[in-house]
Length: 374
Image 1: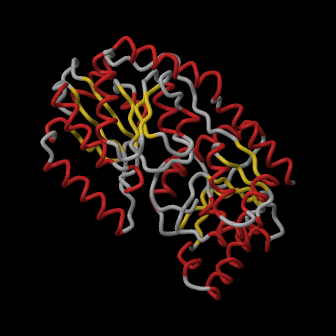
Image 2: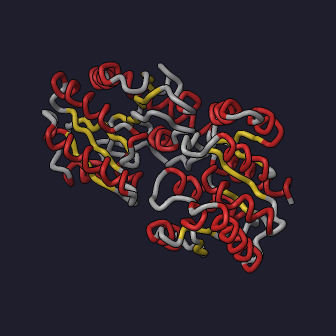
Image 3: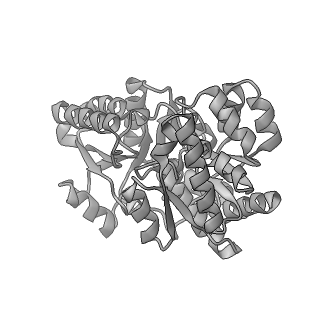
C-alpha cells in the first residue's frame, strides 16, 4: 500500500483481500510506517500488517537501493510468495525489491499518476510479471504514456474490473435508516440528496460540484448536497481541503451543502442518496459509482477515464465533460424533476452491477493471475 490516507485504492484492496481469502490466499498487507490510518484500516478488518519505510525510496539512488534491500528482506522473512502492488505507485516502490527477493510481482494500474515519469512507469512495469488494469481506459492510457508502454501492456496486461457486493435490496431513501442520515444533517425526509464520496483532493474537483449546487438549489430548493471523504495528511492535500471547506462556507448554497468528512460506513450514507455524483478530473475506474449503482442510485458523473465503462450514459446515469458545472447542474435538475426516469436509471444500474461486476469473479481472476506467475 503506497498511500497515507484511505481512499478508493484501500477500499478496493480490502474487497480483493476478502474475496481471495476463501480461495486459499493468505493475505499480508505491507503499509507505510508513516500511515497509521492505513495500518489501522486493515488491522481493524483482521489482516496482519507489516510496516515499511516508504520515505526512503524518495531520497535518491543510494537510499532507494538500501530501501529496496530492506524491503526484500522483509518479503523473505514474511515468506511472501507473490508481491502485489496495490497500484502503480506501489509497484514503483516494491518491484525491484520483489525481483531482488526472487519473487513474482503483480501490479495493479488504477490511475496515470503523472508525477511518475514515463521511464519510471515503464521500468516498474518491466519488472512486474503481470499488470492488472482496472479498466480498458487504464490500459490504453498506460500504453500511450511512454515508449514501450503499449507493448508491455499488451504482453503483460489484463483488465480485471473491481466488483462490489449487491445488497439484498436497493437503498430506499424513505427507509428509517435513510431518514436517520438526513436527520443527522438537519434535513427533512422529503429533501433530495445528491451525494459524492471522494477524497478531498484536487483530482475529485469538489469545487465544480459546488458551483453546480449553486445552480441546482436555485431551481430545486429541496436539493441537498453531501460530500463524504477524508483529506490526506500531505500539506498540499490539507491546504486544498481547507480551500474547499472555505468555498462551501462562502457559497450562496452553503445551507444546502455539508462536508461530512471520512465515514467508515459509507453504504449507510450512500443508501440515503437520491443521486450519486462524481465530478472528478480523472478516474481509473470509479468504484464509488459502482457502490452507488448497487444501491439503485442514478449517477451523474464526468465522462473521464474508466467512468464510461461503469456508467452507461443515458441508461444508468448521465455523463458530462470534466469541469462543466452548467452541464452537471442540468443533469442533476433533470433527474430531480423526473423521479420516474431517475428510478429507471437506478434500477438499470443495479442490474448492471449484478451482471457485470461480481466481486467473486474479480477474486477468481486475481487468483488466476497469482497462479499464472508462480
